[in-house]
Image (cartoon, rainbow, N blue to C red; front, side, top):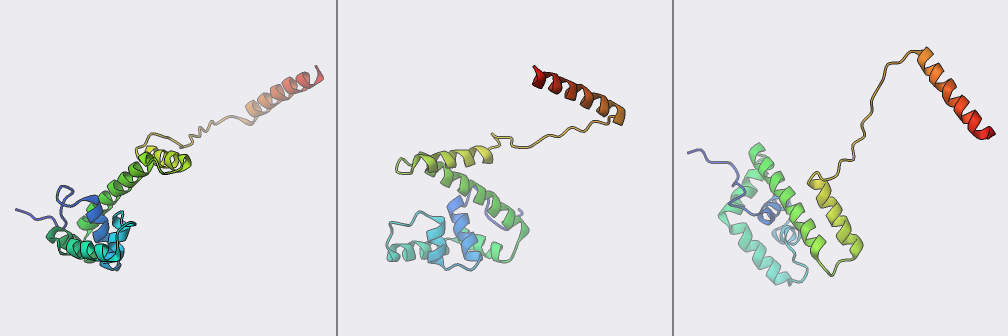
Length: 151
């Protein structure tokens, strides 16, 4: 059996993956925990205990090790879980009734963009036309404009 260098998405949650990523980038366990989890209302002691416990989780420990070793498969899995985490956070923002309507609408807009619901691309079509054709078209438009302004 071939072992993946990083646990797959069924064995590590997006928040655990975010925690592992922050730790791998050099953040302390507590800092990483605060960034990955909604820890605003938690005391420093609770954050420290939870972050320490999370860092000892074998799956999370393996993810941190793989990300620190700059393993390509681990980075790709982490990036995918990171996207899931961002989408989850945006969903929470969109339904949180305590947020301002503008923040909720912005979260919905970003979710729509992430889901590919909006196509903001511009399509340009080039036509090869002769200078004579362009001159004729311009003269016709100028004549129409001239007659419209004289009326």
